[in-house]
Amino acid sequence: MTIRQVTAASEKASISRSILEALRDWFEVDESREYYIRESKGWPFFAAFDGGKPIGFLCLKETGKQTVELAVMGVLKAYHRHGLGRQLFEAAAAYARNAGYQFMQVKTVREGMYPDYDATNRFYQSLGFCELEVFPELWDKDNPCQVYIMNLQKTDPGLDLLLRRRSYRGKYKPVPVPREDLKTIMDAGLAAPSGCNKQTTSLIAVDDPTVLEKLHQVIDPPAGATAPAMICVLTQRIFAYRDRCFSVQDYSAAIENMLLAAVALGYQSCWFEGHITDEDRIGRKMADLLGVPEDYDLVCFLPVGIAESEPGAPRKKSFDERAWFNGFPGRD
Image (cartoon, rainbow, N blue to C red; front, side, top):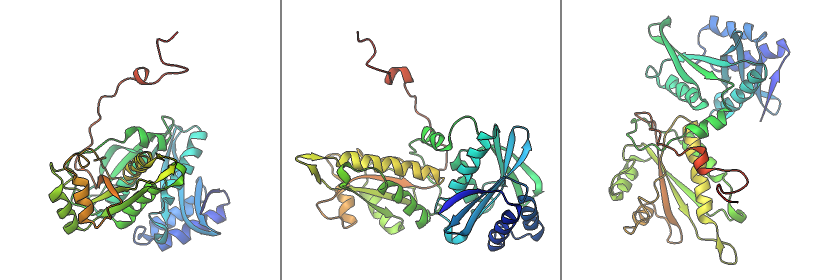
């Protein structure tokens, strides 16, 4: 699958029509759909292709000398949860930065109105958009308009995601996590580097309420008990060479990847390891409940869900207290 900017007006119209007409559940108003198809011919236009087949697109619209709007975006249903929306956005954001725009805005229905639009809100938040204002009757009272804004010149979206990730230990909303999202998070973990490619890390996602309840009965004191899903991290002590084993490094890299992926999808999580690997061997009790063989250790679990509140930001030491150039400070 590839992303490219489309410049020919006829190709823009053809792609936008094929995508929007396939997504009538979201673009059900004929007048709005025709407006996007007509106007897209003059907008900066980015499309995703599977081979030569268009499978998604995104258009930008200038709304001020320093501001563009993410005017319309659509991805065919069969390609949802493949990261194409994010790739389209990143291509469009790079274009907008290079063109000198300072801000990008996007409009959607306010969070809390409809489940489908709640997912859209989480997607925009995961990209780094911030809530600007709600216009209750810009469209109509049943569809209050939420405006999001992003400072394009502040930082790269990927770096912004890394810098704003926080460990979340609060309560979660009782909203199931789709299997596709759990798989995406686990795929991110399995994509992490592995010492000598020994691939010592394995994963088990748990979304069955009955199994979750059994696991939480042995997690004492409780942690992540309200999350609708968890990912358990398993490791094997496989030697890379001689007596060297990099299993700790392997699963640490996998966990960080998964924490970032969870936030990118609009969820929150926390790395619980010391909590279950102490002398009471909670990790082994959890492993036994999941049928994990003895040659695997369950070393961590990550609760996954939509947070009820914003994660707090811990106080960090300054850069100069922990990072230096060309040597440790104070040395001759």
